[in-house]
Length: 267
Image (tube, rainbow, N blue to C red; front, side):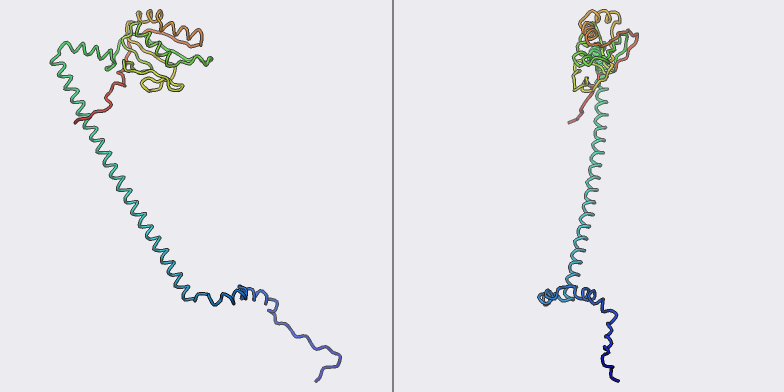
């Protein structure tokens, strides 16, 4: 049957996915056509690319394995060196203990020989040891305490002040002296290190307690009338330093720690 004249033919229906053609084309042809035409013939074959990827993975695995082996070997070497060092330290400590025991034994033998051959003359040696600070001593004496000024910055005790006081005590008749429990001897160095006073390179903190063995009355009188007392009185009047002096019937002063044996060796 022919269509009626003047009646339009029915429109052709579009497929349902016609609107998705643009997205489908983008997904299918991700590379520009010109690029594909120009470079398409140079693309490596799929099998060739797969073998190249396998080779790269193999080389990477080999590198990781070699690195792991090197790390393990380095750890083993470090552990071996540490063990050797520990063994050397233990051997050195044992050797040091043996030398110390040998030195103590020799010192005892020398002391016995002195007593056997010198007899009463050993008493003279003991007196020299007392004066030099080699052995601890005890006896009556005085105690001098010096305190910094809490209000005056110039009232801080320095090494020169301690030296002046110590020299004054020796002049007053002191037999043995200690500062803050540190025995003094002919080798003792009193110096200033920054804001601290050091005795044999050991820092002291105030208040400074000075213990002196000797006749208490003679020491107190001579020190007060001598240069040591005059120096402290000057500091007290002009810089607010305070000090007290008292007597004691029994003081105990240890040996000078700076006179011990630093090194011992046997050839």
